[in-house]
Image 1 (tube, rainbow, N blue to C red):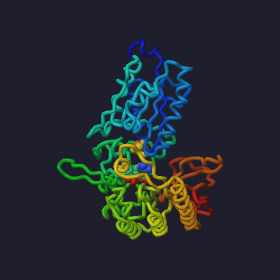
Image 2: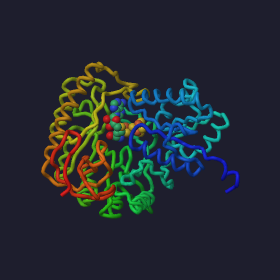
Image 3: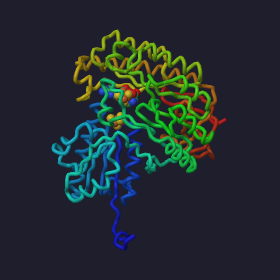
Length: 448
Ligand code: SAH
Ligand code: SF4
Ligand code: F3S
């Protein structure tokens, strides 16, 4: 290292992340690329020389939040003229150069496949040039990059195993912002997982937009998702495994049996259904029917009786009638989802739905339907939690509960949060907890 390098202060980078788990995982790759290039990460915005905002485009309100944040950063930049502001992630792809023209504030724009190029883009931005790279790749998986772990607790970590999506659900912007679907070399996934376990991590979530359609050829042999899952599960019985997000069309019996055969693959499947109406599922281009979805649920329940099932639901999609809405409510009751993420349909420019369908459900109707869905789900979640009362679960301790230093919090294999008093336990420990009470969101219990 040159003497000058040694005395020169490192530039400090602050990363702020919006959107899904894949985006959070990407920020850890960005952190790694940038620290390798000599930047220092900071969690103090005021101390930062560079701010990266890793953005999401999934719904209009996600983009509005980012725009609001960019305006706030603009006033910070007025106080600190040398500050470099970069916009990363999905919104970079969707809004492109307009961001440069409309909001003079951005110095750098990089799409999800351009993160290796960030140090070069930073050099260009520092020299006052327009720094932009929105090229989507057919093969970038960042397989060789060892992510900087930003979560800080040292118990749970994400590993991205595939990128992109080619399902083109008609409402969805992801295929446009993240490009072609590609799977990552399984050897690199395994070595990353082993490394995490050795560092003390006890839970790994394998990530992809369609994590269960992971597939690849290695040495002439096909490698699929159940195989990879079993390999990672084999690292240690003390390592818990989760995965997100699965697409119902690729939820195979082989996958279900792999989960059933490995106690450390968590008893919890997130399986977005979006709608309970076959007409709407067809219009959404989801590639399955209500009957197919219910068949997959029955297959999961038969093989793994203690498995929780969670979902995503969109209400008010183009052409959705009251009867379609009732189909969604009845499906929710039939499956008895343990938890759900529920959204009003938000038209995204450039998607198939925006081009060929009318966003014709009035705002008031969307809100009313969403409320009915939320009310029902709250009741189902509460019932699901009440059913756990009196039962004993193995809980992986994550840390102190948000409300009190005396209480610990952790998750069951079923991915339910449990709060309990616990002395002498530390993050990463397993303990057995008896559930004594609950709300619709949390279980409360005591160590047995
Ligand atoms: N790849 C995952 C989901 C990714 S996006 C899957 O296919 O299931 C996360 C969730 O956002 C989706 O499941 C969907 O419920 C919701 N979503 C996506 N596009 C949306 C839109 N235009 N309006 C409202 N919700 C949307
Ligand atoms: Fe979007 Fe559908 Fe791909 Fe999920 S599967 S990311 S909803 S296009
Ligand atoms: Fe959002 Fe992109 Fe994820 S649009 S949900 S950050 S893939």
